[in-house]
Length: 403
Image (cartoon, rainbow, N blue to C red; front, side, top):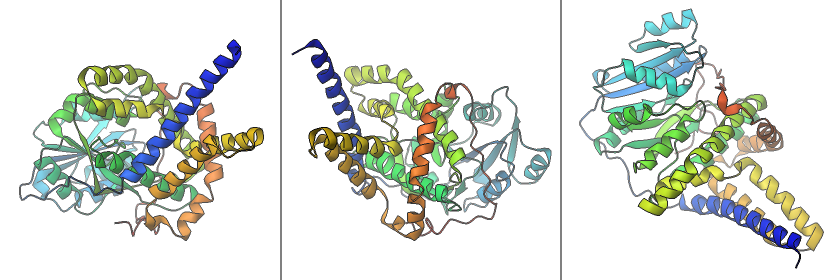
């Protein structure tokens, strides 16, 4: 056997192992999501002091509605504070915000990031809170969100990821993005918790115990993907991240392919940045301290883009048939991968509206490929995702029946 053949066989074997791991990983946790949750928050009569932080960078169109919805939560008024971190908001928006019973923290940075905004707010506000909730500027908390968050704090939970649900279905892209969010919820949140591992953090709809969050945020300086750095540092310190499927926060989904591409470019860039930064320490923590939770979060960063997985596998299956006239390894992986997607989509999404979103899938794949080709430099600057759904937008027909 020639040296070239040996090198080729070795390289091909590594590629097969990588894709088998990626497909198997998703399939296992998609199925694990059907295991009933072993830990649920129990409602208590004691009300803790909660802080709701809402970073808002140029979000004049949605921040007023978000703030008004936040202060209308069914929770004792004297026991929670809503703080809007106003970065580059218009003067008239600031005037209207200051008329509300909330804290308005004006910030200005040479290069704005979510982590900078949060750290600044924590340095200004008093430290007499028990829990902190992080929202995006477009988020609307579901009914009794703070009551449920309080229950988790009462039970000593350090970090909890709520269930982000699509707020809008005003385009095919938004519907598809909402379906993608639900797959995230089931595979990377619910499925992981079901087998005793930490949930991922999604950037908003998050609940933290105040003291530990304050301490960890002091070390977070992410430009993009601050939630990834946060989840890695929590699990590195052996703090469990729970997921509560009933803790809903309605989140605006992107409505155009161009915005989708910018968003995915930011996410993918931060993913590979933190893979390089944390994989080595995570492997060391696994081997020396048995920290599987930290390693699990770090190794996931090596996953190929989920949207593109069936594309690459489908192409490999076609080539396999052309060159070998067999339906073998790659065809099997393609079938398992597609099957994993189907079982991860909640049954409530099997309707005509969701089908409209799935028809946009080819365009979304093209945008995702474009995002990969433009990854260079994406993690060195803040890429803002604009929001603009009208303030009176109600949860869409696609999501309103979700339980």
